[in-house]
Length: 126
Image (cartoon, rainbow, N blue to C red; front, top):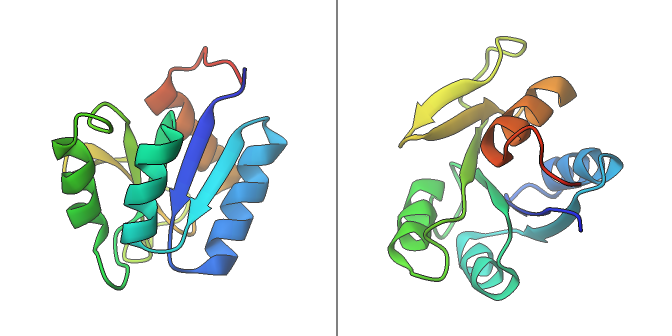
């Protein structure tokens, strides 16, 4: 059974690229375009991982992460943050945005997969 990943980002082009990239590796990908939709889909779909934009209208990524972490339904779902504010493409996977991995939106496929593998465990079934 493939792992399910929820992408929450207000930029449709970013969502499309990440979705396609993850699907080529066999992940099931669901999408949301704002924090409210992301919270609802996280509760309904119970993903194995959430990739979450830091800066979004309506609800910032850290606010959504706090909501997810305070809910019994979603508190154990790991989160990877994405940000356009991190501009050091090719510098590897960064750690520690509120205790979570932080990636640049300009990250390479390899960096994305490294972060996903690190978060889900390199022996995940996909």
